[in-house]
Image 1 (cartoon, rainbow, N blue to C red):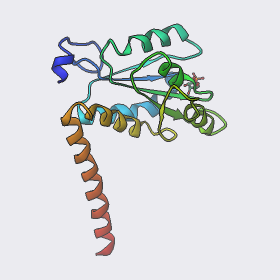
Image 2: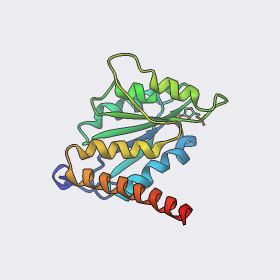
Image 3: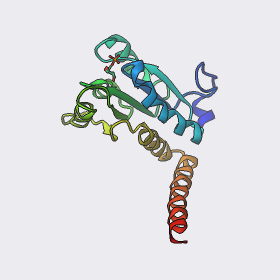
Image 4: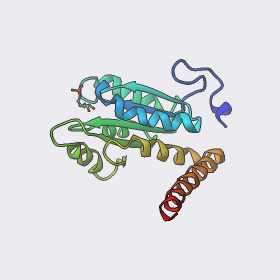
Length: 176
Ligand code: RP5
């Protein structure tokens, strides 16, 4: 499937065409958003990573969002802090599913980002994960890919199984 949609090598983090786009409003969001890349690397999902801000680089953001579908992206993970309008703005300019990551970036401890992303008005959906939880954003993106790529569905099931075994192992250690 990946080869079908991505015949050409792409400059950046993968030799294959990105299926997931990771964007963030500022380089200060990078430490949080790198957690998503770790998961995508683990699952072998090709992705791209860049900075684009809804209020500082609005033209760049619109160009990115409008080209997302035609460039083959199947999901966009958008992290932002404060008045975090990046995920909602991107979602308004693309039909590709957008997953918002509220970044803890201000004196309000990330609750401002959370509510900004979570409270999208009717009509333009943004899936929202927990504050700073770009790990879950990546896992959700992989589940979205899994609806059309059985390999990603299988890998998601294996990942959940490994989590289950980890907890059972820890419980066993306590009970010994
Ligand atoms: C948002 O403002 C960014 O997503 C970041 O979380 C926050 C602070 O940005 P910087 O002032 O650190 O560049 O746009």
